[in-house]
Length: 110
Image (cartoon, rainbow, N blue to C red; front, side, top):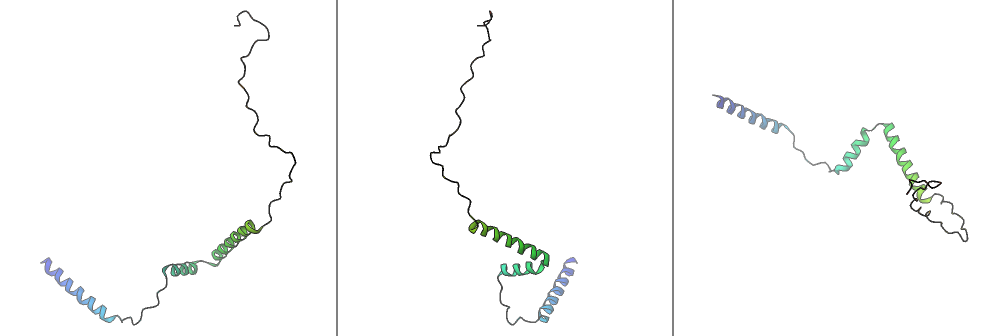
């Protein structure tokens, strides 16, 4: 018995699907396809509020200004040349410390 009920439902589903397919209008011409990245970008921009857009614009402006300052800003001051200046180099390495001796001779001292 359960097989008949399933068969009946399948037939009803199929008939309903055919009715729905016939009722939908055919698409005459496909809309021009927009690149996926451009559509996503446009949707993201449309979803942002004005304050977020201003924040992003100011961050981009600060970034561009900073890069411009690095590239075209004033150069560092040059240090005057000193004639005869020689770099001293690292300090000399201290030798090992000698064994401490008492200030006067003691009998048990070796």
